[in-house]
Length: 181
Image (cartoon, rainbow, N blue to C red; front, side, top):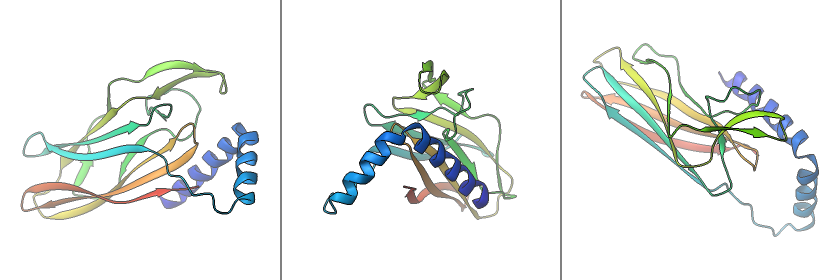
């Protein structure tokens, strides 16, 4: 899984550096000339929530709200771009993804001139929901992550989380956020 993540990150950074070659070199030069320049972080909010559907099923809801002018590529986009929004849970015998991911509101397909193809961008507050099916009544914890490229900054982002089932209650906790720059 980590090798796949490293490969996807490298491919995404390569694609972004090729697409934005002029602006990247200008930014690099500017930072190198002024060491007092503060580092900036991307401005978006991401909320993780678990909601009980019934005794065996739960919904994992991930809501992203990008700042104005920023966006992520929808997992439902049929283009060739790398870095689409994705949710994953580590392989385990206790909890499985059941069914397809849903998106609300639905992203709108539009023509991207740089890619010269149609792309579905999530430019507003969007919730992705994955149904989870409980496979045991025993207590457990399982890690997962949300991964996407935040555009137009072209920064890969990974938000790790832990889902815990204890005493017949399920909860989720954000572990750490990685911005790979």
